[in-house]
Amino acid sequence: MGVEGKRLLVLGAGRGQIGLYKAAKEMGITTIAGTMPDNNPPAIPLADEVCFMNIANPDEVAKKAAKLKLDGVATCCLDTGISALGKTCDSLGLTGLPEKAAIMCNDKSKMKKAFMEYGVSTAQYFEISSEEELKNALDKIKLPVIIKATDLQGSNGIYIAKTEKDAYDGFHAAMGLTKRSYCIVEEFIEGWEFGAQAFVYNNEVLFVMPHGDETYMSHTAVPVGHYVPLDCDEDVHKQTEIAVKSAIKALGLNNCAVNVDLILRDNKVYVIELTGRVGANCLPELVEINFGIEYYKMIAAMAVGENPLEYWEKKRETTKAGLAKMILETHQGGILDYIKSNNNDSEDVLEITFFKHEGDNIRVFENSNDCIGQVIVQGNNHEECEITLNSVLKNIEMKLK
Image (cartoon, helix red, strand yellow):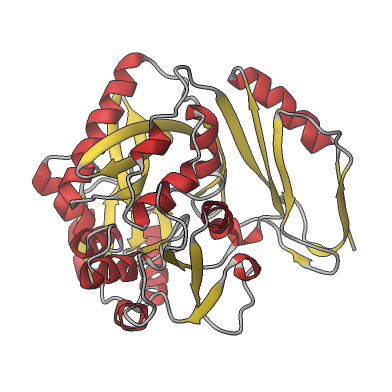
């Protein structure tokens, strides 16, 4: 493929983008890190160049990108730069997520409206900007409900409300975090939460990969692990594929990886939300394990205008199991004295990474920023992966002061 020497702007330089920088370097692509100054993100040493920018500001990113002689722009595992990604792709004529779709990905209210209009199976919702509007919504949706800020990522700004007081408290908390004048209240669908990864190229969905999610209950359920394949019947797989493809069309996603949150209730699959980038917390690695492809390279190739099918067509005929999990502290915080792995090398242990180091503050886990590290394993089935993971975790030593 003719990617060598092409120039790729990567929005973000955190740990979630490290895999993309490494893949691009192996391909001979010149990477430019688009990141804020003075925060010393871990992927900076992997980039060929750095361009300081506020990736949450689409106009600033598009203006600076126009001067960089780019062949592409991309991000992964991060929502902050999605709107800027769309605007830059459209303004410079680059392959990637359309701006209109990117705007809906970054606004849960616009997203839900598009789902409703397109007939996507999703939770009932109302946009609210006052206590009076919340009261009216609660007259139409039975408790419990979920209050969501519409512009935040992960579990930030999301509150489960079992009582009216919880709902009003959640509303004020969400409005205190959002930069918008509104948030949403939606029906709480209690069921089995799971996710899916997908990839769209030239308006064709190449795959929909359902995956299991392990969550930790903070103020809401926070993903702390993922696994493939998803253990469910064929009907759920079919429903998931139909629902994901429908949601992708509803938002007009194209030329992008897709991360989807779903829930199963009474044997019916509902789409919670989705966005036009690959999922975080080792999900790109699980795609690679499952299909036997180089997924980061596939994303980078498409971003610089090359055909990603060369990577996709190398997939295995049979899938493989994979499991990834965060290392976290759930009992007490403190200052990290030391952390080390006493594990022996194994072909089924793909990664043991520590994000925290001696002297760092370790907090009781509330969100992904409190993650201490991560482990990725593979095997012939989920049971093998669980055995390997548990063995790895038992051989990790950590002491807090």
